[in-house]
Image 1 (tube, helix red, strand yellow):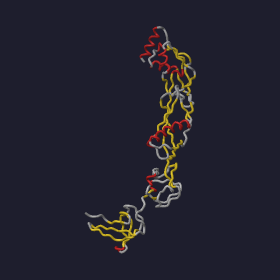
Image 2 (spheres, helix red, strand yellow):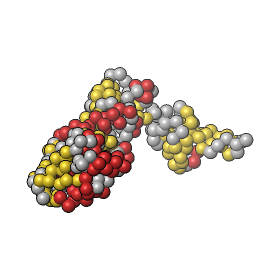
Image 3 (cartoon, one colour):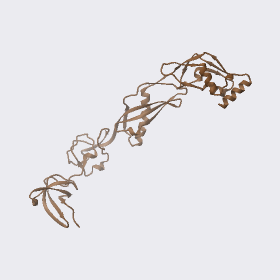
Image 4 (cartoon, helix red, strand yellow):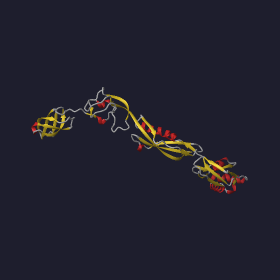
Length: 321
């Protein structure tokens, strides 16, 4: 402001004035109306002229509306900026009818901005094979073209990222300032190289190189973590039947039973330091440490539950000290 005042006083000393010629109609490119949009400014001081051209005259009209800028508003803005009334000469139209220029931002441009930002985030999280698309696709948006142009900046909302979707905020900046933020909803399909059943696998069937293969598979809707490491299947069996081509998840993998239904086992019972061994018949398959029902002839065929301790051995109670 001090620069403007000093320049204006200097002009007065030399009998010069700042001439502002108001135009009858005007188009504004930015988000705010500046004096350069509605008037031609003449001044011998280039710095003063540049500052006057950038004077803010208020918000641009929305859509196809027209806003009127009159000479009184221009004079008041110049005086508030430090130009004395004596140094200012207003000529031209008494008022200017201002309309906004618009550019059309296409939905595919917005989606194209959102996609690499989201992909970069997923890569940092270790997800490198993801297909994505905007759903629903963003619509067209009328935006100011700006005096220096517009740019799009995308930022994924990390808290919204799920297996099948995410939200990316695309910020529309005009002349370096935020004009609008557009939430873009992205649908995701996640793929991994995982182990799958080559053919149908029956419950309790061991996993082998013949019935297990590796394939790029969509894992988006899997309820459990898929198995990708073959070592996780070593000495394991299928927990239940698997169809050909079905991805193998951690819930499909089980330890093989070390006691089989109908097998005659040694039933060990502890009563303090006393150890009693009898024969019993397993009523169900059992893995290590599983509780299974057994029938012991010593207990008049009564069903009791015992812990599988090892091959052919089940235990009731704990060894005392």
